[in-house]
Image 1: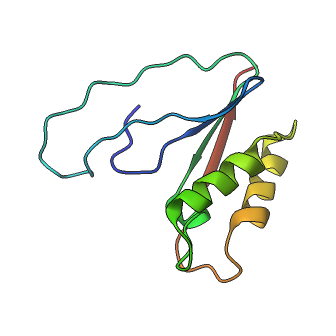
Image 2: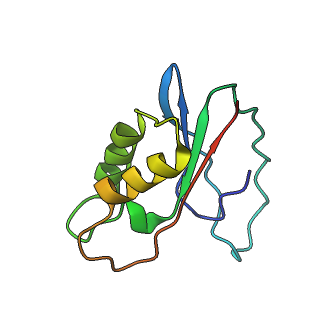
Length: 108
């Protein structure tokens, strides 16, 4: 998995919610290539990928947005479309100033 400077993916399992921390240089920055991150998505787990527009606020620290996402995503709907829509409704700012994308993947 490569992040290219994006925020870490969120992994939701029956054990809880964890960010898959993987620091890497921004895309296009010349630096030593980081080691690959490989993992197996556990059965029943949900992986959430998102852009910063979902959680960034001009008047709040990025860590507040990450905590809010983890709290909101802790309860995963059976329907991933509904789950993704709930994340957008609950987390997106009233006035959107950035692009927002959410991708949720579940292993059965």
